[in-house]
Amino acid sequence: GGAEKWVMMVTAQTPTNIAVIKYWGKRDESLILPVNDSISVTLDPDHLCTTTTVAVSPSFDRDRMWLNGKEISLSGGRYQNCLREIRSRASDVEDEENGIKIPRKDWDKLHLHIASYNNFPTAAGLASSAAGFACLVFSLAKLMNVKEDQSKLSAIARQGSGSACRSLYGGFVKWIKGRDEDGRDSLAVQLADEKHWDDLFIIIAVVSSRQKETSSTTGMRETVETSLLLKHRAKEIVPKRILQMEEAIKNRDFTSFAQLACADSNQFHAVCLDTSPPIFYMNDTSHRIISIAEKWNRSEGMPQVAYTFDAGPNAVLIARDRKAATLLLQRLLFYFPPSSATDLNSYVLGDKS
Ligand code: 2P0
Figure 1 (cartoon, rainbow, N blue to C red):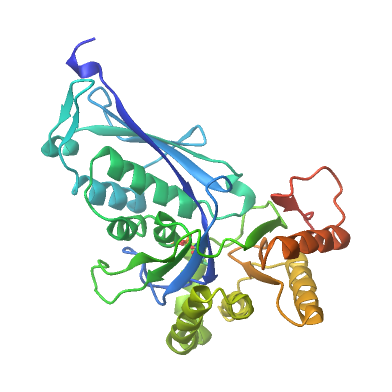
Figure 2 (figure 1 turned 60 degrees about the vertical axis):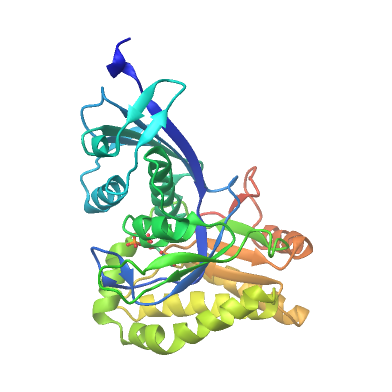
């Protein structure tokens, strides 16, 4: 093997995140700048995560990427923006053990191979772009010895997919919409780490494994163009809700947390309905789950479970504690008797659509 035969690689794993105050609507589409702040909780790394290996070698003749074993194109603007931003921040890299030296200026000439796997079905309508772009940016930054903090990296991941910026941190995370036109201050900050509130149990009820009909990007564009309710939400509702949610998280106040999360999910779907033509992400099963949760919370006198739905019909249910999670699963199994063996981490309720 001559000097040109080496390969250097880095592997990283990143979980997905679930918004409890939703991002919906961009003020700048190419930089991915949102119309409002959002807050999310990052899941445990063992469930719903992306694992990405990035490799560099002088023998690679172009950048290439494989997603779940299948080659995909890197020609899209989002990939190109992330790769360009990371490359421009690369430093000298030295691997003494293997005698490899990559001076900073060589990163422009060297090509990358990227292999990414989701440990959940990409087609299940569960956010995959969030974990995917966060992991891509993080692993490239490690490989190229980028000396920026997580927040700065989050602003790069944001240019791959908005929600991705929130997956650079664990625990509770806020994506600050920022004011700058160049997007430098539109980034994620950690509100509390994963140990701060570890009583919470998250159950994802897979209602339908069909791919959504309206992509988030298209849906948001149509909402921004046509919904007056979105303007009211972004200006009058979300700023106050963000402060209240930060307070609820700080105090581990589940009652406020659940009220805010449910109200915000419902308003996000109301904004979708206020779009012309209207966008329907939830289905009858989703609505039934909301009714079951609301009825149970009312009968207990205080919230036991928060629900939140993204751009699809699947329910994300956040239980107050282990006991509430157990009772919730019992209820779900009662209302939706399983037709076959199920994995309770992703309990399939049957596709009614
Ligand atoms: C969120 N969603 O805050 C909201 C709630 C879906 C509903 O972020 O165009 O895939 O790549 O920035 O991040 C989904 O939107 O959209 C999303 P792009 P993204 O989690």
